[in-house]
Image 1 (cartoon, one colour):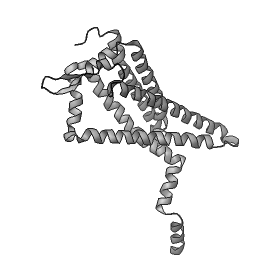
Image 2 (cartoon, helix red, strand yellow):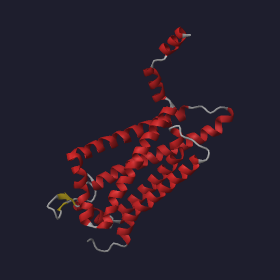
Image 3 (cartoon, one colour):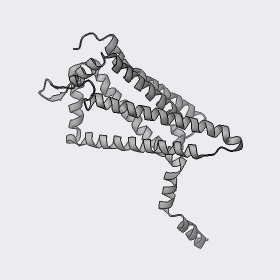
Image 4 (cartoon, helix red, strand yellow):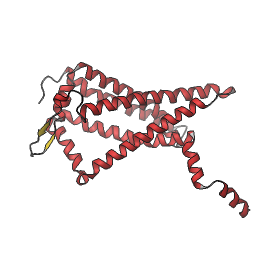
Length: 246
């Protein structure tokens, strides 16, 4: 028996098993779920940072220098590197999973189920790619200054720190109708992606319970809806109600 065990184990080394898992549909779902959790956390933290605009110019303009000062300047670069890696892995395995689903050939009684699975994966892929396009738009507006660059300026805070004038950039930008529309559409796309992803995230990483899984899924979708409402509250409130920047 010991000799047989050695033969079986030798036939499939750990590296081969790991590569087979990475190449499989199950592996793609696990990697997407893990990176999806990381991106969920980023979305929430990013939202909380942006909501500081309702506290006034001094508060939100000081947020950037605060982040850049964490860990003597190393935290922001580690966070950016981790975020880029999470996005890259998430997108790679999303495209791989879509390709695996397209390659699958439904047969017999499993045809309908596989068609539903393929449709869900295609919806996730499409909404994900749309949101990626919106993300580049958002970075072009708030980080790179390519969009409405006339409001991409610096300001000196009360303590003498020079910071990006995020408040004026957001306020003036969200007085432009087409820019507000793009942001609202971007958040609708994000909501659709989170809604579909939440339904399968926990099952993809192997956690499933007949009672608690639907509860957790509904809770995730409720959080996604709250994120959507809070995200669109900023451009809509500034556009419709915030008459004068302070």
